[in-house]
Length: 322
Image 1 (cartoon, rainbow, N blue to C red):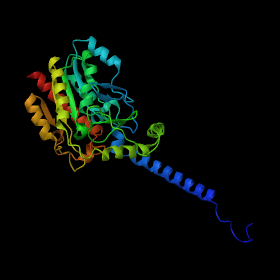
Image 2: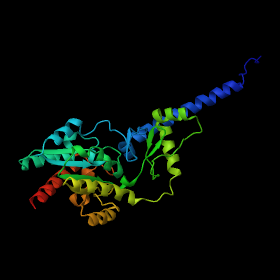
Image 3: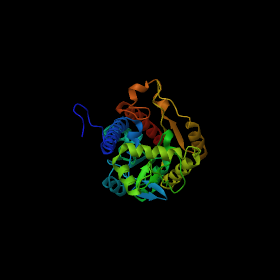
Image 4: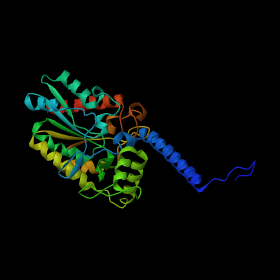
């Protein structure tokens, strides 16, 4: 019995309850903070944590975008008309045009410019998917029978050499991995079924899992051959269909002005060896402050897309006139 005026000492059960409540509160605060930071980050714009693989093409894991820039009717229309000037775009979130309506993306704006200058119908098939790397862009081969383009535009960004892993039923986005694309990893020593559910619903757990996977792969070398193989395959298919392939090398937008990435040297070496035009987009933005055309360190705003559209349309018109 507690003496009058003295507070009862907490029991073991109440102490445990306090620890559990404090731990849950801390985890909830960390989860909220992770979601806030993630929603504002470049990574968050590239690929959602917990994106589920939907299929593989030649062993390359693919997923579906929530809002594609094309639909099946576009593919059928292009396949049925032989008189169109057709451009196929392969890229990731930069070509896709995050935070922009389709009408403001550079492929769509270039289509409008070309349509005013050409007598034949113009079609732009934007196959870009947020987060895709070059090997995934190469997987457009699954649509190849329906497409006979005049131009194939590949938009390159410095992280396109990365490879994805599948952890359980979810795509993870760090470093390099072997040909099968699979790495087992759990952030906590818990049953697999619980790990799966946490990956689906917890941004914090997904981030911890990604960091764990990345830690085991830090020694992996940068694999340029992975990129060249995919680009060469795209080029070979473009040649067989009579299309011209062009690589747009995207610049960094983190400095005062758009600046070419170091990988441009490798891209140009590859382009020279295969007869592919490699365009340094930083040259198209010469004298333009990055703040005027950037959403973040790599994505363009509507003005940035408009500048690319105008220069790309002029490039294709000049090529046709040769």
